Amino acid sequence: MAITKDMTIGQLVMNHPKTPAILMNFGMMCVGCPSAQGETIEEAAMVHGMDIEKLLEELNKNA
Image (cartoon, rainbow, N blue to C red; front, side):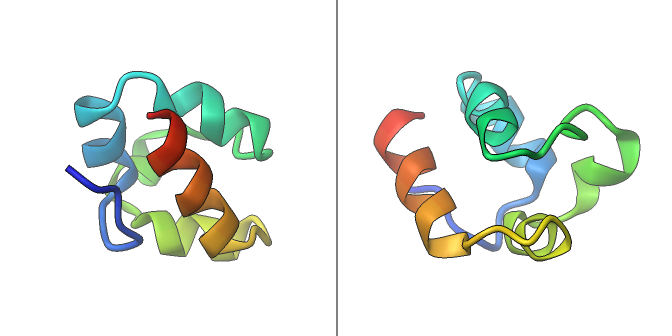
């Protein structure tokens, strides 16, 4: 199942256990925060100033 920008952080972590480490490598340290669980990957990337395309590429390649 491909990881998309519309998935929530909660869905991502639940379905792809390797992804928290990838997110933290990109500087997203709030992966476990309750409010982050309902954010989409796109929303979280925007808040943290990340390039969504690079993040999705890395998540899909290594998840």
